[in-house]
Amino acid sequence: MSNAAKKINLNLKVWRQKNAEDKGYFDVYKAEGIDQDASFLEMLDVVNEGLSKQGKDPIAFDHDCREGICGMCGAVVNGHAHGPKAKTTLCQLHMRTFSNGQTLVIEPFRSRALPVQKDLIVDRSAFDRVIASGGFISVRTGSVQDANNIPVEKKSADLAFDAASCIGCAACVAACPNASAMLFVSAKVSHLALLPQGQPERSRRVLGMVEQMDTEGFGNCSNEYQCEAACPKGISVQNIARMNRDYAHARFTSED
Amino acid sequence: MLKKYLSSSIGKKQIVALTGLAMVLFLLAHLAGNLLIFKGADAYNAYAAALKEFGALLWVARLGLIAMFFIHFVFIFLLVKQNRQARGVQYSEPLHANTRSLSTKLMPVSGTILLAYIITHLMDFTFTHSNIANATVCGDYLGLYGLVVNHFSNPFGSLWYVIAMFAVGFHLTHAVQSVAQTFGWNNSKYTPFIKKTSVVVGIGIAAGFAAVPIYVFFLACGTSSCTLG
Ligand code: HEM
Ligand code: FES
Image (cartoon, rainbow over all chains, first blue to last red; front, side):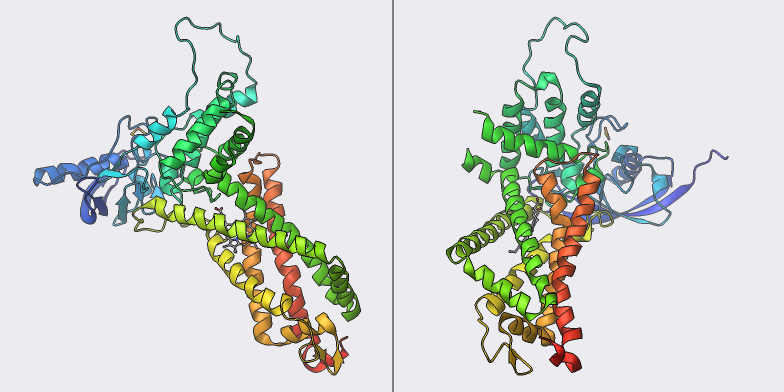
């Protein structure tokens, strides 16, 4: 097999927006001679280099790890959060997914609760506030506990781990027809609710986090499951079900 | 506590699910009654008369049903309004076009058709009492049975009913399994079964109800109409 990767040309239609107050608009760019082994973000790097050389403002986008684990990157490409490939973040999406001459419409994740700051960058502090309202356990830090001191059932450990693999990228909000954050919040509620360490604050956690989620102005879940389809980590909507029953239970039984 | 529950997204959803489920149970009972039309005028009219026997109790049930309907509608209205606001700026490309199921996407549409349908349905069959003018088939006065037959002999009456039953089918195909999720019942063991049940209930209820106008219009009317009764 030859190592020389195929080069492709693409037409980009990209959302440009100066700042949070700006109305924003779509601009068109040509991405030429793009290596098919490049990632989506590297493709944008190439386009931005060209823009910078012309003295134009490069397209702003968020990123950090570029290996699919930090949750910073993300955009909606042709109507798909993180692009058309399942269980893949934008930074791990490679240009071989696209064909020569294709037009890509690139938009920021859209929701009122996570407003656009600039171009493709959204402000996800609403997620931080949801976590701060209960997505933690209060423990004494310091000396480490003995390993295996607290027995955890294998099945629960697996489910908790699956839920904890949420990277908080907000693709679920972007993909939900109602811009609901239920998949994110339920993953964070679930990974602690499934473990013994999460039990003492279980009620307070789900009540606090759901209340904050609603306050932030996310939409309501209508069981469309587009979040699950878009999630780069394959977080299951079973977490949403778990949160639904935990919430009702906590609301009617706890004194929090 | 209840106030916080009812103003939360999850609480509102669960109220919608609870009232929706109550209406589904009502529909199943209603369907069982309707299918008596295939046994003929006597069985059908006797069933209607037996219901009337309940008197005050019937009204309690009716008011309960109206309450369920009203609450369902009000909470849906609130949810849908918030959902529309939550996006802010719309996407230019259709979102995840190939993974959205039609029945799910159309919930507000099928629901609105149901709203319109239920109003006409009440006017046609609940508030219109059978009399000689509207319930006589081929010279025989047949009571409620006659009213139904005459109503469905009219193509518009049948067509509107069948359209509404498509809406019911779509609504419930999504709705029944959705109720399980909304109350937190989703696991790998039972969910596939619940989803199948939802499709069966949705199509079953729609087909069962639609069988009546189709039977009346195609089989009972026309040339053989006077063989009925
Ligand atoms: C006024 C007319 C109606 C409207 C506008 C309406 C609308 C809706 C909508 C938009 C949903 C989705 C809610 C969501 O997921 O956020 C829904 C759910 C539902 N509807 Fe209706 N509907 C109507 C009448 C009915 C009737 C007559 C029934 C029963 C026969 C019914 C049963 C259900 C059920 C069981 C659900 C599922 C709740 C859930 O997702 O957990 N609806 N309705
Ligand atoms: S940049 Fe870290 S997940 Fe994409």
